[in-house]
Length: 273
Ligand SMILES: Nc1ncnc2c1ncn2[C@@H]1O[C@H](COP(=O)(O)OP(=O)(O)OP(=O)(O)O)[C@@H](O)[C@H]1O
Ligand SMILES: Cc1ncc(CO)c(N)n1
Image (cartoon, rainbow, N blue to C red; front, side, top):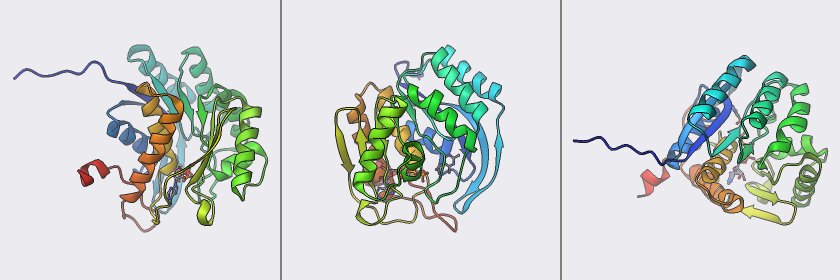
């Protein structure tokens, strides 16, 4: 039997941290790419010892090693979209921002991972400044959660109006082409409601609230699904709407493992076909 090869496949790159528990980070990103039939490539920025209860240790990868991974992928394989996740420190963020510019990576989704939904700080303080000044301005879309949007906008966020105001401030001050403020960390009927702003349209993006404690990796899954859709050539707004559907489906088949917050599942096409 002749082997069949596939040469016309979309390629996406994730620049992010490893989650040993497999729910977030690189592991979630590559899984999301695969379920979109997009070939996933990676540049690992840090290694976390992590499970459903939290992070117990983080080791940084040297910035030069992060750069080498990005160059190896882009210069040979080429990517149609990329996403950034946990970048950990100022040196790594600065190196990544330089590579994005030098290699002219377009379709860049920046998930500005700084604070987890449980409120735990995931990157150093001085890294936030470099994220704002060097990386977010190059983003096609930036996807902060409630706490990250508070840091980036300087506004306390307690209502839908606050989310909208923060999205506008982030758009106007930081220069990303679009902003999606995610509502997984909001209370009551705002939980799971996101706000989009692209300089023209302020839209409420909502599907349905999924009652589950297993929400680990929602943010990584959403930003990777956006990147996968962009890699396949979709326009930004449909890419975001379809990614929101994807993450909602993933929440509906989340995985009850570990003693804490389990991960979202990606098996719904297999479970529901
Ligand atoms: N219980 C839920 N029901 C429906 N949608 C949800 C729920 N929790 C989170 N979401 C959605 O998941 C996406 C990710 O948002 P969230 O605020 O959880 O990001 P995050 O804090 O970056 O995630 P992570 O836990 O990976 O750090 C958003 O579209 C959000 O609305
Ligand atoms: C490695 C990694 N990236 C991102 C997040 C945010 O969910 C996490 N918990 N761990």
